[in-house]
Length: 115
Length: 114
Image 1 (cartoon, each protein chain N blue to C red):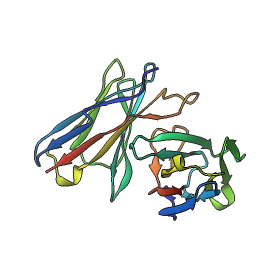
Image 2: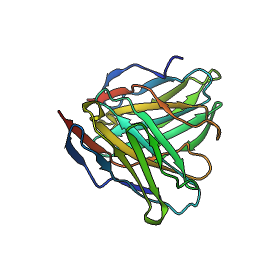
Image 3: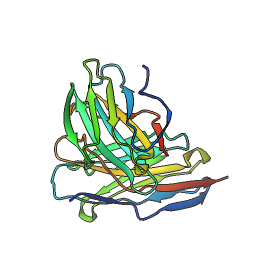
């Protein structure tokens, strides 16, 4: 069965520090997709990234970067030079098979960026 | 391009009643997925509709049902409400094809059952 574990329930860092959010997943499928979402206090989920299981290249988007390692079943998310606006709950998620329409979410990591 | 809209935004119902929530996807998107978010269980997938057909379903009782109309708008219905159904219900819209997947979420409907 598929499962997503975000061991860090809550993290606080001072602005401008780098922070890494951990995500470990379990799946029996060889084809799957991994996601990260951001949920700011307003409640709306914001899509950040989708990565398929055959693409292990790391991704960088501005201050955000993602490290996908199949060997350790991890898909970690790093925010460089954090800002107060990055404060939110971040969810890692997984969907199996060739269609990623049923997503299993981790419990989320609440990130506090302190000014 | 207009985003995903959900109505109503807030709702208070009594145990035993039924409720219908609505989701209007982004124009051109054919897939609508529904999720329930509670403090205890987190985010859980309810079901997904694509071109008026349910393509996938999560592990929820039959009291939870949905449908999708020809214009891709979707409704979710919960019958015989229980206190545990109090949650934020989110819908997500996407093209629904392998070429275009990114899901866009609406602001949610916060349902309180008393």
